[in-house]
Image (cartoon, rainbow over all chains, first blue to last red; front, side):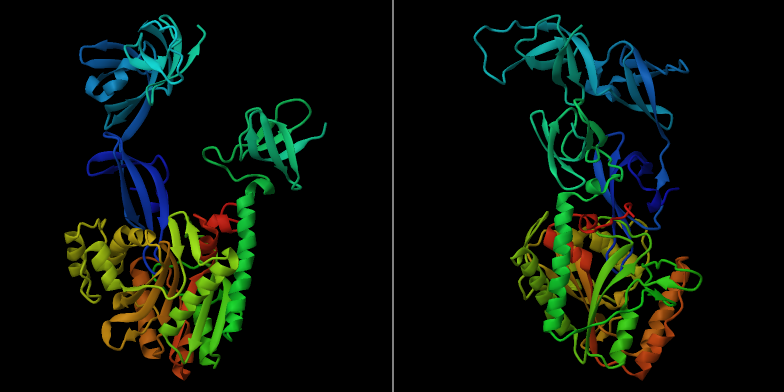
Length: 187
Length: 393
């Protein structure tokens, strides 16, 4: 069990049956009263953030969660298959868990796979990936206004907004966190 | 070409403005450095970033110029002006400044405050109140002290283990006079330091001119937590009321733990949004500490807390002068400390004897000086107003 003195960023605890991680905490103490740690927890399954005041002396239950770096191999029906590159152990992660991140997955891409009670419950992509444009409309000559973008389809399956000068066959750096174009890179 | 070593103040294009350890301003090419970084630049190479302490988790800076930013230096100047304003305020009201010991054999027994041990049978004070009351018993009428206090394991945006307390007492007087002092003192210090009685805080601006609005604890709990508090109900009843109001109790059982669960979750956040200070008065007898019961309502005691911008600035008592009740409360606190497996400190027999000799009716208050400085500087954290913050000593 943990108590308030163990609270730090990244601590994984179990509350109401769900795993949470500490994202922020602060010491609070009314003059004549008990000390509290005002703590923000992120639910590792839903991403929702909640705040709770943990009283000094209160106990927190550790959550059995583990994050492993794994390589993406291939898609099989409704599941994405990842492999632990040291143990060669493979796991199937359901597409509901992978969500919209699925269309950024590339062969051998290293992702962080989160396990809760030995079950895969989430994946985190690298912040940036390099991908090739397989389809985009050619730029219209004369349209030079500053912020105009157009859609481009990547070889991973995702569609992102890109500047007008990008053409099919270009290689791009993409920020997977907000699904945005960063820059064109040389092959 | 000479060597530049200092803190980056600004970056324009590919040029940096750097303040060196000697206080000079220098210009050098930017490289990867951004404002806040400590850089070292020699000859034609781009500067080397020695510490990027404003980016992400910052380690304790290893140079004094990095440790004390310009904002913090300005705060230290304001701190000195606040101390001078404080002393001129008390001098004008005929208070005598006294010095009390920091090393004592009987620190405060309050259940939720831990003293820092200093050797075998001595501790550093958590508050100078016992010694101040002995001076009242000795016949001094208007006294104040500005001293360091120490409370183990208290570290946060509003807390440091070692901090500065202002305490003042009025013999042959009462809590109303102390409240009037508090309002006038904060207004005076604000005007002397900032030129205005309107403080600009991160939570918004707060007008501190006196008199301040007041609210009883009962009213605050009713308004902000939707709980009807009697003040002397059993803990089980209080728990039921709080649960009905949807307050997360997290396994709290003791009366004070229950009360503060609601106070921290509902009342304090509401206070932070106010544009005027607030005196929270008439505390439940369960949270009496060293205050005496109110004559017209024995469920509450003569105590107020002053909140400014959501920050608890001061705590005041109509002082308990009855030696028998004082000893009984000390014994209760010792027993409760034992129950909670906290160190049990001895009773200050010299204080009890002073009460037996006779203490005039008195009012007294403890005000966190660092927090007062935070308010006049608009600082969010206590470390911004300290020359040496936790982790830097």
